[in-house]
Image (cartoon, rainbow, N blue to C red; front, side):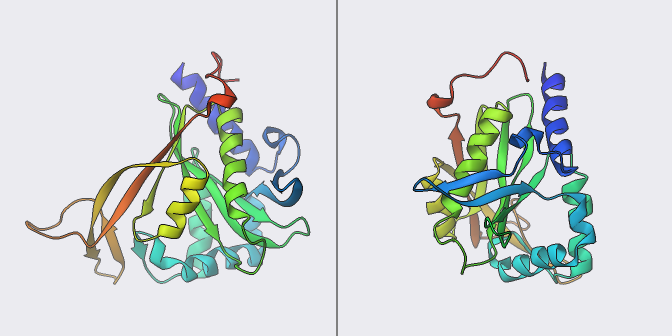
Amino acid sequence: MAATYEQYVTGVFSALKRGDLAAFGGAPLPVVMSGVRVAEISPVTAASLDDPAHVEYLARWRQENQRWYPERFEITVEGTARWLQNAVLQAPDRLLAWLQTPAGEYVGHLGLFRCNFAERHCEIDSILRGRADLLPGAMTPAVQTLMDWAFTALDLHELRLKVMTDNPRAIRLYERTGFTPTGVIPLYKKTLPDGTLRWVEERLTPGQDSDRSYTVMRCPRPARLGGLRQSPK
């Protein structure tokens, strides 16, 4: 059963990354605030590799928000294109999506990653606002829209995430969308030979103190969506 479910979910992700929006109901997912459609969510596809503006958005937004990632390194457009190709588009259990205004302006991105097919849970991933001047307050309904889609279309039991504990703004966002903190994972600083700064979960030397941590959060399937279906479809 787990193998069949895995095939279903990875098939949905693959189709979306090809630009087939059938799993989204044939159109970008609408993001609604106070009854008004203010934004839409559409999958990042291979076409973004051929669009310099798309890759530049991803690179610039990552550079501007490095402090919230567990790894800091030199961000380049070329490296970002390789990341998009290898770590996103070719990852069977990963989906990245754009958040756009109805007029097509790019606001940020959000996604899903690291699906546990046997237990039917997945991580909310890559939640990032790239434009602070557009759609104030829209990230909360955008994340909620993606969550509702994931629970219903993918028939998930639970969504999970890890967020830097020193990012209270993000934690408040996740709490507004139904996530509850369930624990803390200490992180230890490691500098690689190439100068990359990385925070890792394993203690590197005896007695080493952690200087950062992850807050672990979970959101079970809302009761309003009903129980898991017997079939993955």
